[in-house]
Amino acid sequence: MTPAAPRPALRAGLAALACAALAGCAALPFGREAAPDDKAAAASSRAQYRVEVEAPDELRKLLTDYLDLARFQNAPDTEAIDTTELTRLAAAAPAQARTLLETEGYFAAEVQTSRAASPDGVPVVRVKVNPGPRSIIRSVEFAARGELQTQATQAGSEAASLLERLRRDWPLPVGQPFRQPAWTAAKTTTLARVRAEGYPAATWQSTAAKVDATDQAVELALELDSGALYRLGALRIEGLQRYDASTVRQLATFGPGTPYSETLLLDFQERLQKLGLFESASVELDADPAGATAAPVLVRVRELTLQQATIGVGISANTGPRVTLEHRHRRPFDIDWVASNKFEIGSSLQSWQGELISHPLEGLYRNLVSGTAERLRSGEETRTSWNARVGRTQDTPRIERLYFAELTHSRVDNIAGATSSNALSANYHWVFRDVDSALLPTDGYTLSLQTALGRALNSTEENGPFARGYARYTLYQPLGASWYASARVEAGQVFARDAVGVPDTLLFRAGGDDSVRGYGYRTLGPLVDGAVASGRTMFTGSAEIARPVSAKMPAVWWAVFVDAGNAAQRWTDLKPVYGYGVGLRWRSPVGPLRVDLAYGEEAKAFRMHLSVGIAF
Image (tube, rainbow, N blue to C red; front, side):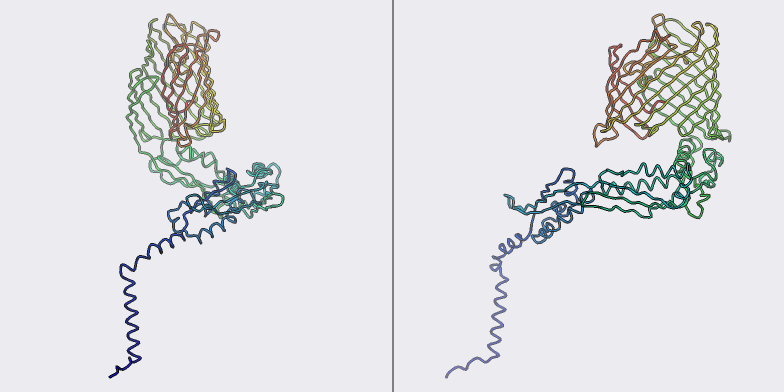
């Protein structure tokens, strides 16, 4: 009997079963042998690459820092960039590079990219740049509107002077290369200057830089809207608990109606911070346009504790190791004065310094009563002295003045014997500073002058009148390329008959940290009976060049210096001695810390010197 042929439904079922079986076979282990080839094919579509930029040195860093093509080459996900993405980045690079070059003033740059394979098979993309000529500023138009322009129409007015200075000092003058960062900085700096000079609401009405790529020129146009001229109003003081508001008000050198100036408020704030009564002080202008004619000045203070005591341990190259105790009461006996006492006990110096000084009075004056007592041993000599002062001081932004009457006593014991003398004198001290920083000056100068007229009162020497003069000039000068120079000259003289016994504390000696390095403190002076004595004339000078040790440590400087000077009884007897050496400087927040190794030519020996701060 012949078997029957399969029905259509049966044939369809068998075909489906065969397809499922074949699919299952593909999932078995032996079916994965093709996977390595698949991975290789996928890897061939990925591109680890390098970028080479051919451009002038000053532009290469700009392009390698900001071109997407260059930035992504070292990114962690570089392996995720495939050939297609690399092609896109290379195609976009010329337009992106031209945009970057325009910020540096190159508006006709030619940029080309090409690809090649390196010997190790890594793709290399070359970016070749021909920047072309740099555009130069051809013209600057500086216009103003608002109250500044209105008042500037009056010849000789402060507004006219300010507008003239703004145009004269514009940071991007004609003929200078154009750079977008410099253009932005110039606008920011100029606007900040206008706001600081009485117009805190000033804004730029419009600014434009018109580029002529054909002539490689840029035309600048600016219009300033100054807004209103602000005038200062009443002081609003916050934070006072123990002190009277007059203590703060007396330090303000302006009154209602004074044109606003940022410098005025900053000087006021600095005086508050230096007063010694406040932990912090800030001074701000209330810049609400509605109150421009009498803008309130906001003063916020945080008071220091009423009393403060400090114990210190230190060492000085001049007087050796020491222990100090300082105490300050900022309102003793509930009166508006400050009482300070400092005791120092050391191997060479034992001293007490006391001062009672008033809170600020009208005109920035302060009354004072002070005294000192000390015992100083230098070399084979011991000096015991004391003084008492009554006077008045004034501290303005640039000038310090001190007037006082003084009673002085001094006794000196050395191998030549003992001398004792007293004096009553009237004194005037004057200090002028024009420096970029009072703590860390690098540019400017200071001048200190001292005068005294008095009468010596002695039991062992002749009584008589005397006069004393002293001057110290210090110059700070930046030399460029991170080099800085400083120079100092000081001189002093006492005018009196030879027989008149002037106290040793009013005479002069040289040697030490702020005098002639390479010699001990107060070891330079005339010889009297084989012992160094104080002289009636003195001269010292110093010259120093310094620069930072490295760009990574800008606060640490090295220096070389030469000092010269001496003290004598007469100018004809004064023979300068020399010291020179090298040193390190740490420009700390409280002033420079100086460590110097100096060779004293006359002493024929090296000496280490250590000091902190600036001497005026």
